[in-house]
Image 1: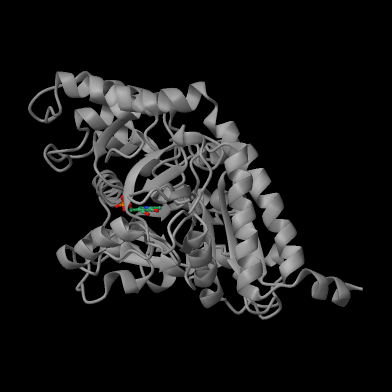
Image 2: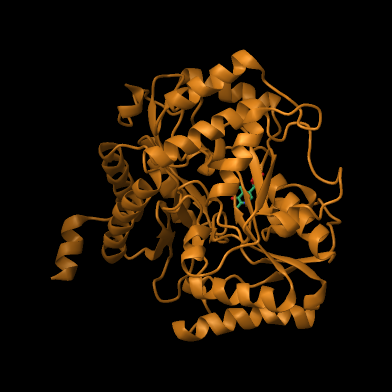
Length: 462
Ligand code: PLP
């Protein structure tokens, strides 16, 4: 079965001839701005394995960038989508009511750890749309114009979310941007100011947030603070729970809503259905959750969830859209969530993440190029540096390791503001044997790229 296969490269060159031909057509037909650094043209995929047009098999630790927590082509999700396709594809929700939309909203209302007894959910198509909608809803409720986002944040590529996203390389030449978006420093503890003890870091970062009220937007004009519970694109950096509690307190003091961007961290990725389930355990909840990616196993869908009084404050016609809550996507999501709960994928995420983290920690001790290993459940980042004491980022080494991994059939993706982090975002249905195979390839790539020689290292140690 393809889903149990191991990574294997059978062509002499990568991409192989058939894949190369399709990639060449892509290069003629599609803008270069939609860039792709991987030599892979898909033929089929199952679980954590992608087979390319030439028969090469790749172990996929990217999962469509966090979309495939349940794996490629889960047979039950495929069956659910086919069953829906036989009935109808689309029922625009401003025109007709279809049960999939209602049932999925009911399900998310019952699961999502947002504040409030009665909740409401509506759907959009992408993560950026979910974030943008969450901000619209927050503005409608608070009647305030501004929002606060963070350094390292990634929220998407629409005009508002380009403005919210920290990295301006993603927004080159696209201005002017919407006004009213202010930025505070995210608690990237590994890169806290040099010499600062860890205990001093949280007050420092909270102070930085408070400064926004002084220097940029008075608190009474702020509708929402938007937080990724674990920054994805920014470098797989978990928001420390004590910091989240302090942010919640600031929000409550000033009537500001707390939005959790769970686009990448949702749906079992971090070891819970939502990363903000951990917040709830610690006694805090977001007011709004925006989520997408793994919700529907690869069918485009995103969701915005908030309590009744927030959602009901939005005037008619201000939110919604043609495809939001499409029937095929809702059918896929309902089945995906059912399987995640039934097969305990959140627990699987925790055990997989533990294994990966333990191995990365071993490598950190051994190879001298890993500055930090961090994460939550099955969302794990490994940060490469040139020098452990100066923490100078090593983006060239990171890129070389990513390319070497791909040459041996392991797909991993970079992240981080310096491009020196590799993300673990593998499907949670990956087998243990596949996980071991991936770790073996990854370690070999590190060794090759740093020119590691076992015996030399042993002698130095002796
Ligand atoms: N928010 C976060 C945290 C993300 O990771 C992403 C995408 O990577 C987005 C928003 C944007 O999602 P999309 O690409 O579906 O618009």
